[in-house]
Image: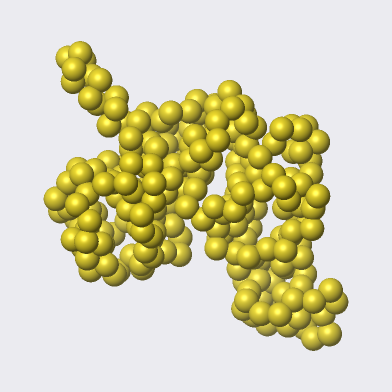
Length: 253
């Protein structure tokens, strides 16, 4: 059994893997370390891996170090991975984006893949059929857009992302939510259409915690997978374990 720890901007995602199959997922806040310990007591983990897009507290670092099995950290541009990273500044690439690229490509192989992750930010990442990660784009997510409208105007209120959406808003709240959510959907639809025109064999992986209503003919090529980042982390862990065993057998340091 392997443990993956995906530390994002809003929560921490723990997933137990048996080989390449996810067994259970739980979410926790960064200060709920008891959940990490309880999860590790439930399963007999042999190895683990974690990635983070935030600065970890000393308490969290110590909790990971205290686990009774080895836990590696994914470091972009440093940790060996089973795809080719062609990002010009590999050490600045978010580990969640890198893991998603690995997870999506190794799940299907030999296909051009666009990964769209809708969260605090909307990230677009592309891996070609050769297993080469070429890069991507970053855009503000729905909540960031809502907060920006409130922060940079005097009159617009701060509203929640979740709520009813219509074609035309008949209140300020509806107008804001409509504008933001439809804007996100139109942006994603346009990106998928553009990539599909250049890569006819394109597969799209859609992940993140935001539900969208996409109106595009390419729906048949879209896979919704909320575990694509943990799957990528697990693939990277398995790859490094295999490399370590190979090096030990051949006395390679």
